[in-house]
Image (cartoon, rainbow, N blue to C red; front, side):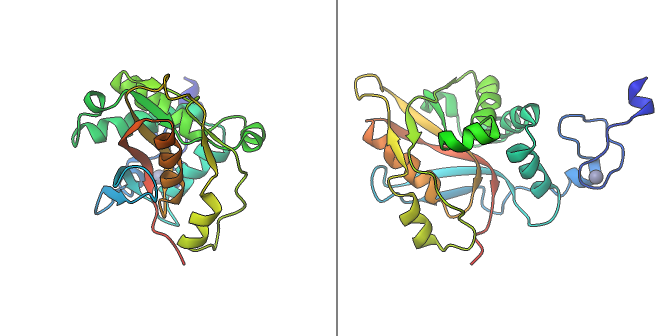
Length: 221
Ligand SMILES: [Zn+2]
């Protein structure tokens, strides 16, 4: 009855929608598309020779992906984050059997100061949804973000890489970390963040099975 009086509105175009979590109508939903190449191969300076990252949707500067990302990061919509994690796990199942290759799901950490400001880490929320779908364990105690990165808007790939090298540090001792890890983050842009996180995991002695993000964003220079 309340739904009839106050229907949920699409966050993209304000039409009524029956999905209170995603809050996208069927028209806007169609603008969420898989990237032309859903897998991106990154090459960390240290650690695995190749880091394969799967992304669910292309990020466009305008449109529903941008609004979802904003709500996920700043809107405190944790149920949205879990739903996106669930959808990400569903999509990746078509490509690889993650559960067979990976033991730990490791969300890319944010700095404790950011976490206090925001109240949560969006990558962790996505990982919770992903883990629920595939029956995996989320570990937030394996690596920590030790440096508060400044705004990365406008910096190029090399600068980003330099900003981030050493931004993460391993937390678990080698004896505790057996098995392999699968990284989760909200957005893949240049790959610098995921590379740096993978390097810290590598220093823990963990194998890295790859990673996944909700969005694949083309770097803007
Ligand atoms: Zn819409």
